[in-house]
Length: 138
Length: 282
Image (cartoon, rainbow over all chains, first blue to last red):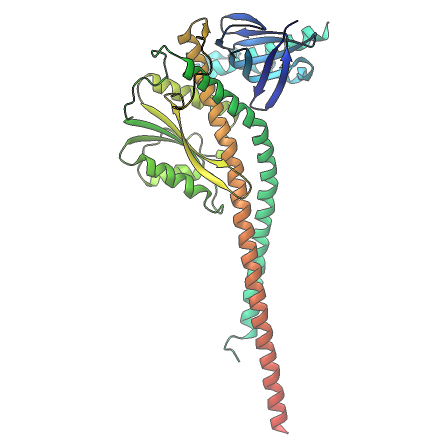
């Protein structure tokens, strides 16, 4: 299978740098798949699961926010948060979920900014949980 | 006798010793913080370069000049927003004053608003009567990645509303442990580097459309750059403090050696005098 050069870089360091055959990420307008020979393209990332096929092996990760760009066959994924499924701390995600739900329970006392932050926190926790659980059941 | 009593010299030596202990301790604290900050830089630098490169590529290929945030006309900006990153504490050599003076010099004659990060930046611009956007980030040490992104979002919003024509950032680049340079950089509007060839001949496909993509990725980009600049500044601060304290410790040592010599001379002079008196007395 034809491969392309993929680099995944986050503020915490380089997560992946090498050849990959397939990449599926959640963008702001839904899932998007990329294979070798894709045209130049730029999009913003949403919150969701990322799937990377490299050397015939599938790997999943939680991928939240950031930029995806394909320029002349080079794919750059620059997310704000990127965690490989096996590196996700499920307990932490669960704790964050619970905390966010509690915060959202009393919406009346929140400013819109706080509410948005809490919702974002909840969503991140849910994404992490779902990515971690889907891999563990495989 | 040299006029100074041995007792006086002794007390000066003692006070010098304690100063030296303080500077030595500060140096060691800075050195250990520096190691941590350097590790953070090594992990965040690729991100900084990558995100900058991606945006430059897009800007150089882009032919639709109507995109938000891209510079369309080469007009000098009138209302400029400055993000200035300095430290919370002094005793770091020229670290704070270099970056603050550089930014202040650039502002000359323009209508500027400052978003200060770090207590020293807040104090500096307040004293000079320059309007501050807010003082939420007065503690540079506590600013997190999340803060960088929320800063970026509110700045982008203000830029889109036309409150500012230009957004710049002033920070210290960590060149090496011994050298840090104050730098300013333009964040918005984005302008492709003049000499650069388009990264590709092909047009770019924006999914779902260019405006929406830009609305989403530019705040990410700005947030990433602010975070990168913050990491650079933090490491610079520790490096500057380490070398300033190292110099201070060395100076203290030199002074102690000098005072010790004086002390011994005074003591010897006193002994000699006593002997002379005894000999003369018999």
